[in-house]
Length: 144
Image (cartoon, rainbow, N blue to C red; front, side, top):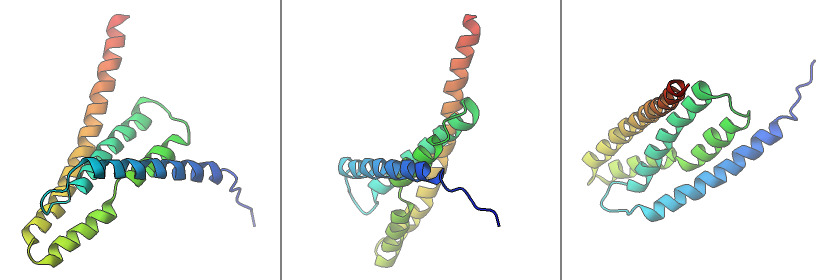
């Protein structure tokens, strides 16, 4: 049997943990900044949409713009954005809205609206990043 070398796992786990802590603190900051008015959980919706936009930016950045350090994707993608976004809280909030009986239409609206808003945010993140990086490359080509 061959032995698997796990010595490279420690730095990956360390940057994920550090990134997760940063993301969780940022999420908490957003929850203090965004008011909770009405029955829609605006804080959760806000962090999930921002996080989805950021993942669109990240994926273009690391796959189309430049080759990143091997720890960047686990740090930002898994750690920071994983700690920042909170789709588990979203699921609990949808369930709570639907179980209350008073907010069934709000619950279904939040259920579908969050998914649509998050997917649109990813597409916008990808599109804006491609546009900005293409504009930057185009400017450099014209200057030569």
